[in-house]
Image 1: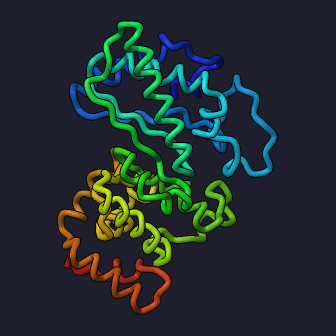
Image 2: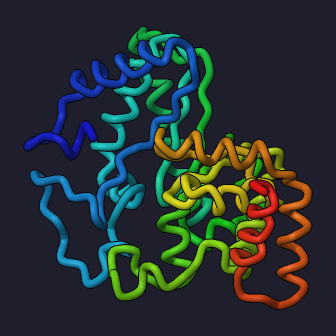
Image 3: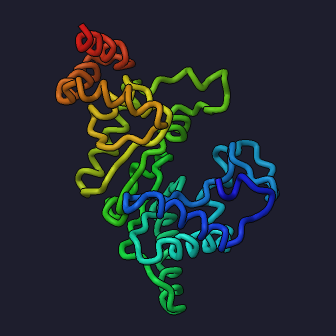
Amino acid sequence: MQFLARDRMPKRSDLVANYTRVLDAAAGKKVYFRTLDIGSDKVMPYMNRPDEPNPAMGWRALRVGLDKPGVLRMQLQALIRAANGRALSVMFPLVATESEFTRAHDMLMREIERERRLGHALPADVQVGAMLETPSLAYAPRSFFEAVDFISIGGNDLKQFFFAADRENELVRRRYDTLNVSFLTFLQVIVDRCYEAQTDLSFCGEDAGRPIDALALAGIGIPSLSMRPASVGPVKSLIRRANLNAVSELIARVQARGLESARPALLEYVATLVE
């Protein structure tokens, strides 16, 4: 938002002030900062937008940061200075390969070393994570899952790439269900790989704020869901009333029967909770 809600590139001092206010307001609670995630449907008015036939799969997010390191370096410097001795968690968006994460991680470490040489206060602890929004990253080498401190599944983009359905296109965006068994099976691969590597995992996206969908995500083992504040109450109420072991077994039965979606079975299960 600091980059989009203005008509010129922000200064590093502006970013430091904004990030400091966020950390101060959090009062010690963990804050995850996602680095600049422009491109596709997010366009900065002061940046020349390349003419791309398919922006959603083009030059965006971390790809821009790695190709234009000056902007990413400025943001990382601002985050380090805003931490000012506090813990810092940085998340890189749209990571597609292990090498992209490694390059971004190394850039952050170099900026921390630079701040040390300048005599500035360093973060008390640094955690570095990735947004898993491309199917390719789910099959990255185990070394990636061991190197990353946390992973956030970016459900909106991941689903559009999985089903080849543009989420901005009304003709196809509602065509594919999050509770499609193929998609749930794919998500289970990510859950299992994170569990094996002991890597923290969360799910971020519109689906996490829909109670039935959130119940399924929790049922397959995703331990943390990110959603809009208005969705917390309904989602929390349903998950607390449900038996997640029963949900997991229900999804497994749907998979074994070769059904296309787990939604009808989950709706029947939820109906028993309110009787």
